[in-house]
Image (spheres, rainbow, N blue to C red):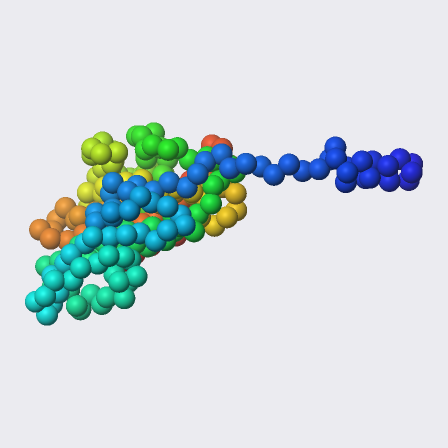
Length: 222
């Protein structure tokens, strides 16, 4: 018996049992159309080239040609009226860096377009926190959610009792190199009971097995 096992082990090591590397089933993807000011074609091996100008608090114009400049700029350097736009720029830059770190996924359990059925399966934890902390209740089952509707341009609107939330697919790929596809959703919202108020964040999600629960991996805030 030992001789047989040794023979099998030798055969495996030489050819028959050798493991063939699994090719990625999907390449990293980035939503360049949604990144205002991006003038380069998204490429994981290249930083983003920008052409984006904001008004500085000093009165002069601040022109950004890359994300390093944006990240090195303080919010105090921007006029208050354009602060939210500056925060959005930094959020988009953070998403681009996640995309640059991504590799092709060997297993993809996420779609390449958003539809109502997928939005309904997202965990309630993608929504702005309402004081009760993150929840794994699905959007379609959440008592907070009143309706789901298309918003144009591939975006989806989720209306809750308190907010109007817009969800956009922003980037996709294997961000943490575990072989499984991940997705970045841009989640923006405004409060329904306020004339001016809201926010924006990127939410990283994954689905580890086909048909399994969608998990929130992290939230990225500007």
